[in-house]
Image (cartoon, rainbow, N blue to C red; front, side, top):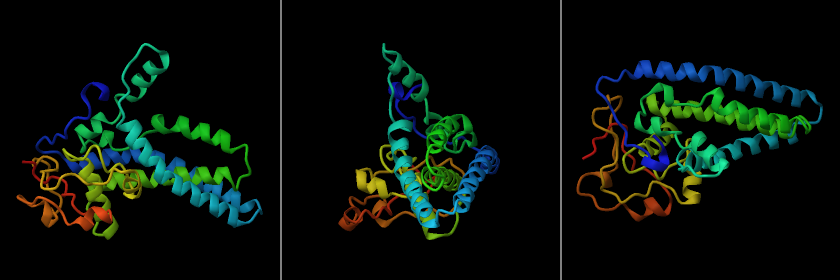
Length: 263
């Protein structure tokens, strides 16, 4: 099954999904990546601090790496994970089709499945090694620290993504990012809300949660309930539009909780 042939499938929720078991499976995939990449980042930062070149340059490159990741996660999610790569006669087009056209299908079809929540070493290590080889050509407090910020931000993003699928933390940020991402997984949201840790780039690049309001937009009601379902008043049945300030200020508070019924 390929995106260029069928697009992204609608989410399915079979009865009796054991979310605790799926969460354990997903964590088991995340732990090795977290340990390896965090250790490499910590070692890089330690070497930068021991280099005697001062912390100012290292701090600037670290911050640049973190900021760059927020854009990279958006671009990869939108254009690689969601992008179609149709097959063709040329070797490059055929390679891209075989390598990328199947990605992300399982995650959108089975958003509860712990085997498809996060990436793996197979997905990320080739790119990390390539960037590391390039960064090694520069002083340790510059591009190596930039890469450490990039890679560590990836680790944080994966845990944020894991959390919005399985947990319900009571914090303002978590409620915001959970609604943002779970709207993306709804029937009407797969073409918007690509940011995984914020909606900054969605707002900047034209993909915020600005669907025609009043449409049903959430996952199947068979999804096991894990929390109260909070829906903005303008999402209630019969509502036609939201207050204009919602879109003008890019305040995306119209996403239903996981499991809200689709009519």
